[in-house]
Amino acid sequence: MKRTLPERIREYTEHREYRKDTIGRSGSEIFCFSDMVLKAEREKNESRSEHEMLRWLQGRLPVPEIICAEKNGDMRYLLMTKVRGKMLCDEQYLSNPRLLVHLLAEGLKMLWTVDINGCPFKRHLDYKLEQASLRVAGGLEFDEDPDTYGREEFESPEELLLWLKEHRPEEETVFSHGDYCLPNLFAEDNTISGFIDLGRAGTADIWQDIALCVRSLEYNTGKNEGCVNLLFEELGMAPDWDKIRYYILLDELF
Image 1 (cartoon, helix red, strand yellow):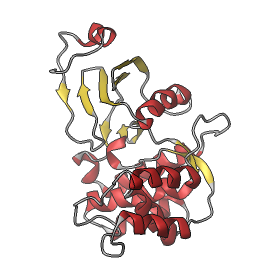
Image 2 (image 1 turned 45 degrees about the vertical axis):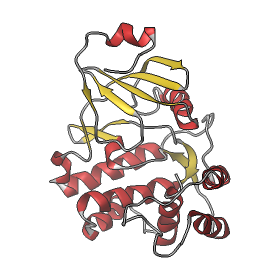
Image 3 (image 1 turned 90 degrees about the horizontal axis):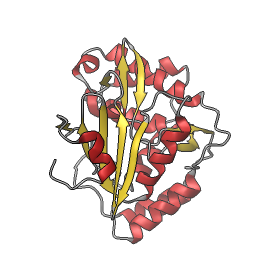
């Protein structure tokens, strides 16, 4: 490990074997040990939020326990217990779409059962659009990925932001993961065993997580329409495609 770690973190990790995770796209560095995970990232709202959210969620959801959290200059270090099982983007689940979809639905239902009284973070549209405005004002540009949602319809992030402000839907508040995609869920013995990357978690509209779940499911299964239809069968609800599109577009500004 090349970077200089805070002393307390070194006490736990020195001379321990690890591998560096290459799946995540959060911009943080992830080092995986046999029984714990170290997350190193630049100081930002999400890194501060994740520490507090993990503490609040203990006993409410299967999430990592904090072993040690340190700040050094503009870097934050979070050493956590390792979640059991495999990510839902593992071939074990991608090769079994019915099980994959069942697990995704199970995870959503688990989130929605969390009592939101006392939840430390509100991630409703007032907050999300304010944060999006700050990012756009700071020079945010569309991702170069040709599959970026909204590229053909909106010429710039500024144009997309204006549309989002003018077309905001009504919200139904639940506990939300905030970045509900396959690499952020783990399963073992055919049941959800853990949630990770909770820096965007808090109270939000129910369709926030559904929308990103649909996007991640399509991305990982080659836009398999049958999988998406099965997801809503598992959830026992009809898809609201307008809200799904809205929250996917909103996520392009984050």
